[in-house]
Image (cartoon, rainbow over all chains, first blue to last red):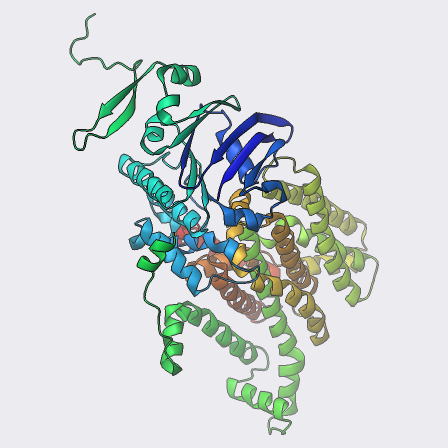
Length: 271
Length: 363
């Protein structure tokens, strides 16, 4: 299943945020959406998910216009992982993940045995089996994010939209989530995620879309797109992009080094 | 993802047969939490007949019930029949109905508005019903019109609030706009009630209006119960059918939609259901606050937030709670204390206790 965004204009009623955005998310591909705060990443996601009306252009799921699709249909095609939030009522992790099955459950039905099996499988896959009976409101921010990914997985969609899945996670959980994203892609799911960390785009992205002021500034492989010039243009700061080889297995990887931050050596201060 | 499915799926369970199977299923789905509310309700039901100026023991109660069902005459004095079926039964059933209806719509509204501090009259149903009743009393209409007008005005108030919210919603959170227009409309309706009280006959009508607003199930007749049972059932059916989807409303509009729910349709359905139940309850009992606020809290502490379990628990607890308060109302003093007043006296401390002890109900 393929998601095609074509000449999409988006925003809130009475306020345009972005326009002319086109890109594809192919099966098994991770597309990283980079861009400054207020660049329109979240608004774009909401429009792709049909939560906001498109203000022009359209998005197509396997050639079918999202405008013509019902909520259920969209939810069976595109999974959504919001940023982890606190939650209002103490639903268990299991109940939370089961909610991902809604699009597969009849209007008046409750989750069946097989829905539970799917939910349990996703909970296991995300490594949160031990906390499945704990209230979502009582687990840590990282665990919440993992639970929300499990919930989106329970939707069993071929496209997955993730809004800053690594934000507010500790380093270990960031790595775990990135690893999980590449695993999903290896199983044929097309993932589009937004991130503030270009290093994450290097780590897991097959393609990068840079969104600035509501327009696509550049699309391409991370190595093509994420350059000192582009980062300077997008974020207005000096970044050096270096290609390195890991000591352990010699894998080539690019990393970004901010040049403006300079550590002072303690004790060398002179007055 | 089908490859993981096979590897991670637990072995298929063989359904165990017979009583063992039933017991396993019961314990597996944790029905244990329902034992206490059910026992409380049954106990309260039996107690309701045993207390009062003419006590009827559980034994006598069972005897007259069997006699009524089988048609075989019992050898108890005929006054027992009158006390049980004419005097106490309508009142007991009314208290249970009102309690169950208010509590269930409270639980629905709390999920819908993602706020455990919401009560079913947040959209103006009670003040609307109050205005309808006050108007009917002011116009010296028969009792059936007092109930009828209060029911219709209760529904109309919520309809108005919903309409205003649709007009002004723009891009803001739909539930926030609903609550705000509910508050404003309630204030307006309360002003209407005050105006009617001001111009009403101070010796005859004013006390009647005041008494209605204080809330009571003392004068409910068996025939009234039949009439309100219809809207209460009509409201309850969608809640039972939609019990799973209601859970998703508490995630917020956008997330629920992303998971495949048509939230505007579900919201209007749930509001209609909750309003029908509340308006029906209020039309026979007058305004009884707090039930819709605290009973869902207690139920959530017992069975958790999942509406499939929360709904039966609130129905049981709501029925038992109002019945208990009404029993106190009619026996505590020489003169009957209005149910609504006593309920506030009992409800406020209970709620404060829940606030300190039961924080985990919503955190």
